[in-house]
Length: 311
Image 1 (cartoon, helix red, strand yellow):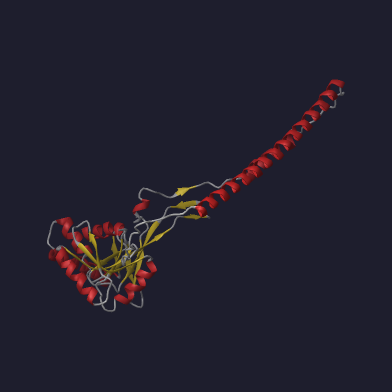
Image 2 (spheres, rainbow, N blue to C red; image 1 turned 60 degrees about the vertical axis):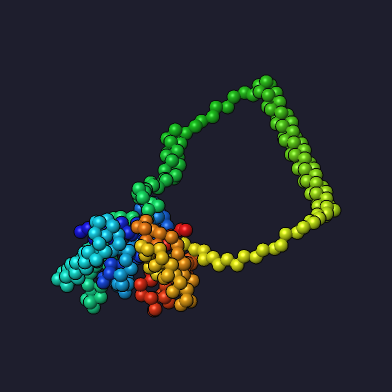
């Protein structure tokens, strides 16, 4: 069904996709990992979970459907309601329901709803096109055993020969050359150390002279500029608690003023790709702070939801 495709599209872009009247699909990023047993390298991905408590419409899915099918918002809500009705009927009749490429729902013996995500699709856009990589285990001991077997079958024999004076002379000459080489290397090391010590001393002397010149310098400003202080309140962070999205910017600004009067640090974060002006209760640096704030906010504002977006 098309609704399932729309849910998949939104899971690539958002971490929370609410199906009004049914529940919310939540996604969380996982790092790449290696399976030691199979030697498979798995790319980073998003794991999908389901929350039955988040059923209030936030407008995300309905607006996306309305834009994709060029229909009005009410018709899009009716399509979602039909989709939810089909899921509920499937759960009642078969004790299970499935959303393509997302996951499967089952009803347990104690009548609780269970969700099992499918792993066929990776909803992390950064990992698009990446597949599982298999690396064969390196068998270093195999080559060692092969060499030992060859040595056992074909032993090496050495034939003694008479030593000539020429060979002895060459041996002593080689020893002399080696001694000269070692002494040259030792001398070169001593010279390099002396050069390094000299460079360090010269650098220290230059720094001392520069510091002395700075201390002796005098700076005079005839007309010093007055100091100006700005009190700017900034809310850094890419985790935003959304209060709503409005097509008319004036309505969005009114909503910001209302929330500020209620004590929230509300603000506009710009328009999304659908041209809706987004109003947020607050912004946070970390996911943990945002989730904690969202849980508190849900007690008074059930429509609030979490948006991850870099401004």
